[in-house]
Length: 309
Image 1 (cartoon, one colour):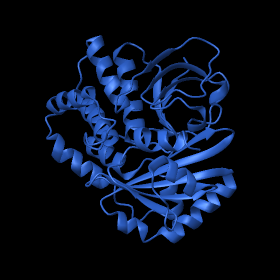
Image 2: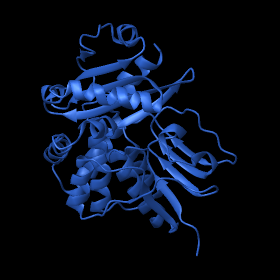
Image 3: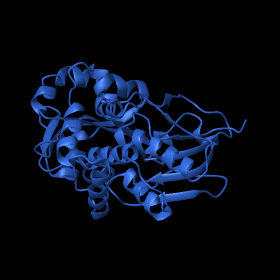
Image 4: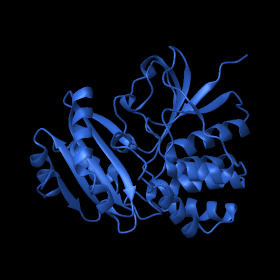
């Protein structure tokens, strides 16, 4: 029996990571490559649960590590420190991503598609079109959901004309009202009451390294920043414990209001105030500050933090 090619997104998967993995498997199957399998590197969030439940799709199998030589396809990420244990010795045959390219090295040539779109699923949508492959309703909803999630219903500054066009067409195929569906989906992901502080800071956390130091930017979406800030003391205690355990130098926890397109960030670490002041022209008060109009980790938070560390 031929070995399965594993398809997965980053750790602490978001809706784009999960949906794009599933869609890439479907696309491979329709192209005649039936030996691939979508898997996940962490628990799915409530937003993604909403999507899969509506479609009656089971979440992909969870895996923690891979063996040397395992064939893999990476979606929605390329940085090894955001990927699975053993990725350095895997056989990466393809990457489909919309993030910066960093610290990836392979022994053999591979297919690599990287476009500065707002969502990985927008890239996959274009692959369907370019290959002349029909998109059914399930695939349309999976891709539309990913685009809604990553672009915050096209409100994020990461949104491109390609995302807008793809979402419009996918909405037609799925025969859904994108605004109504998208808002309900996003709201489903903001129900955070039953998450522990440890779960909250890991729900959507991404690690990046700079000058030999490990840094994390985590993000949660909400309709009430104040509700999350009521837990600030416990969140800070949990963040500090995580930083000590994993030798993290700087930890940024972004609380993003999806309705008003603003964020409050809690920042812990060496020279945190200096870094934030240089990055955003704001001082931290009680380890936090408000960032008006900031919703995107990829385009608005990470680049400013990265160049000021």
